[in-house]
Image (cartoon, rainbow, N blue to C red; front, side):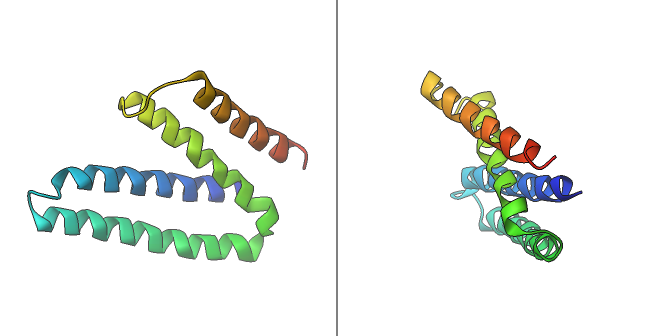
Length: 110
């Protein structure tokens, strides 16, 4: 259950990042659209704030927070798909290092 809750906060963070990235394309066109996107992002993050409150009441921060580092590989994959990053082996090794750390951290508790 802990993993599902933490992954949901990561998904909210990714979605918020994508909304902010998309809103930046409209910054010179209309203030209303930017305000709408910022309002959505604020709403999602307020929900995430309360979700984190529940997570930290139910689980130790040292057991729940490290899983949030999956955010970085997800953003890297999205950046590759949208062609916004220069792909290199160093970046790939960094992402693999993060993922292997998450796997080791999560499986050591079993």
